[in-house]
Length: 116
Image (cartoon, rainbow, N blue to C red; front, side):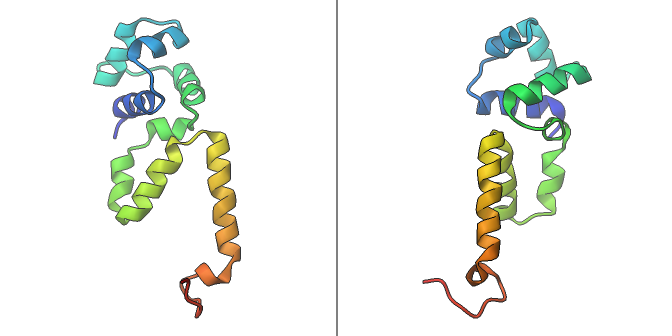
């Protein structure tokens, strides 16, 4: 995915219309449409603001998520995509839960214990 597709995806994930996002950024709906169609791209200042509004990183907006997808199995891709859709608090909760699971040897691949 390119930035145009990422902006649209994050806008929709946040339940926003183009008009809503345009108002938050004090720009026109046409500018948002132009970004999402790939005719133009936002400046770095707008990318920073978009990341704050969407609760994601600038990298999340700029990354080509489909390239990453090819290097992952479906479960890994689902986890990454879902993680990126969470705000900072949600991402912190996921990280803390992963740390908990890591500390429990029973969940490790090489564990001789079976989870029932």
